[in-house]
Image 1: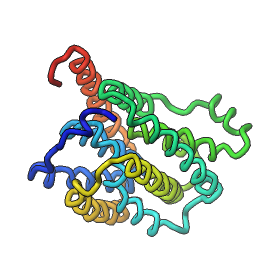
Image 2: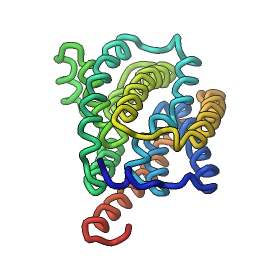
Image 3: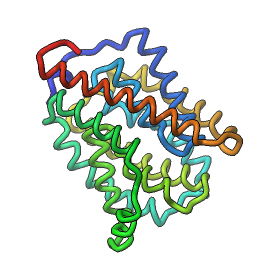
Length: 260
């Protein structure tokens, strides 16, 4: 288990105020743009909290917003995608949890930064879509891979990048991503808990984040069909890029024995 998980990290007044605001913004973006909010929360929180703490907490922070979006857009969920994704997510969470706690702080920083850049800038090409079309139950395998990546780095990205190119309407994209990632968050959280992560220490912050996550989702639903999402996607891409570069700098500082 990484050393930073063994050292207590205080829930300061600063975090009590800032993290719920970040979750509010992430929930709003996830509803308006269909995706990107979870990655934005992860990227932002990793600048003010230890990475090894942020990754297990990220799925819990977004939980209430995902529940709200799933309920609000329930009838728009495409179960041909969500159905096979869920059992795949169980396997991905199990494998990812077993590996995550053996990773060093440097490895997680490099992995998280790389995943952020990859899924922000590398689009899903036609070749990869053609290959996926020939795989039996492709969304089952997407569930395994996405959840594994999300468990070890905090950001899966694969599901969202595939959904961008889907033929579903915007409500269907929001609903299907929310439903699948809600199940994934549950499996990841159970895995981290069974592996020894102490969620009770962070309970006040989690509860506040749930409140702001629901509020952000509610506000985002009213804006869903009123605002073009291209602005938000570009903003997310720019911010995530900056945060990813800072994670690389942090990893280099740790490798050289300096304080990041």
